[in-house]
Every structure is written in structure tokens, then in C-alpha cells.
Image (cartoon, rainbow, N blue to C red; front, top):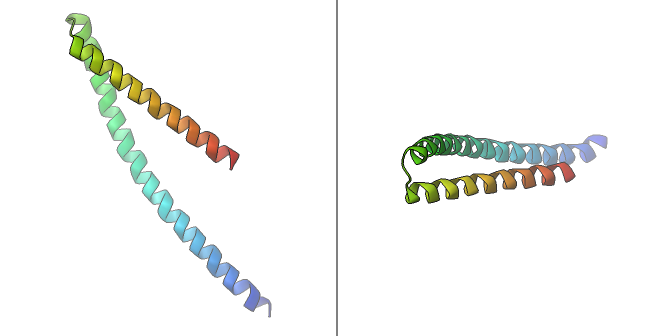
Length: 88
């Protein structure tokens, strides 16, 4: 009797666990891609700052500012995500 009640619950819990594992695996790959992109952006900003100091270049200044803004937006999104996870 107890097995008839617990069996389906265990099956449903297993489905949820497998689904969560798939989601986490997908998120992990996304995090690695984002990390790689951020490393490239960081290298760009360092190089752009060096060049901007040497030569005044409006395009480099604008590109650098927009890149920084995008990074700050990404940080805000991560903070929002962590806040959402903490609440749930």
C-alpha cells in the first residue's frame, strides 16, 4: 500500500531532478560563454584605455564607454538574478 503511494512520488521527484540537472547544465554552458566574452571585453577595455591615453580617438572613447555600460548592465542583471534566487 505505502509503495503504491510513494512510488509515483519518487518517479515525479526523479523527473524534477533530471529536469533541474538539464537546466543547470545549460546554464553552466551559458555562464562559461559569458565568462569568455567578458574576458575579451576586459582585454578590449584595457587596450582601449591605453590607446585612448596615447591618442585622443572619439570612436575608441565611445566604444569604450558603451562596452563599460554593457558590462554594468550585465552586472545589474546578475545582481537581480541573485536577488530573485535568494527570495525563492
